[in-house]
Length: 373
Image 1: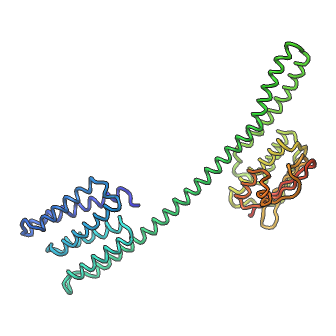
Image 2: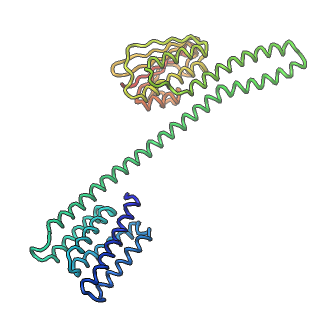
Image 3: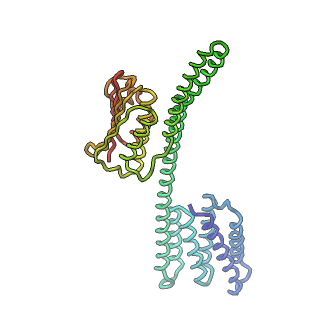
């Protein structure tokens, strides 16, 4: 798509061409005739296109192209000097190659060359220069079409990327809302209900009210831990830190916040070349630890990082209650059964990785992720 400034420049060039030929016409000794009428009409048309933006539409632009071709034919046939027809020819090719499709440019360039050959005396004029100009116009139009297709593909790709990014943001919002609803919000609701109980007990049984207050204190401590875990899961991952070091810090913080014994072991591994892969893996581990804290009832968690062939392997194991299902399942099997952690499955799919969950209800579970390096 040619910018508005380029289209305006072509309109101005048309006006300059028309007025130049019109101003020069009296010096040829010509009198009022059909030629002068045509020049005046073309000049009026050129000035009119300056103020009529509807000529940017495809049908009207084709009409303008036909009129420009007619002016070139007029200049080549009736005007007695070569520079006038040369200017008209050059403007015709430039406007066609700039504003119109490849097929239109080929048709105009071919018709113009046929007209030049027919109206040029043998041995007269620079036919080779006219051929070269026509070839350049066609080549420019072809290159313009190539650029427009690339731009169209790029815009389409950007739209797909934006759509995927919006989907990821929406999924993350849903995950945050679900985590907040299942965690801090439920604690607040429980706290509110217990406060109402304490208010009633103060009027009947002071000792029972004291016991209830002590339980509320414990609930508050748990709620603070829950909120810390929730806020920490929202924080961005530190940049410039290796994957192994980030996981180690995450496990240490998890143990401090929850009181669950957590260990981390790592082999000598090289971080994935794409930073996004490391960030996604950290987010997966963060969500895994959060799920263990909220749902498993585990007292021990072990996280390991290693390398399996050309794949990076992360494994999380706990001694909690396990998943609602029993057995070993791959990502594909979990998808078919419509079970397992939804957000983690989605992230693993985006990484092109593998997921294996081993659930032993009442004894614990393990989650293993492998992503290509």
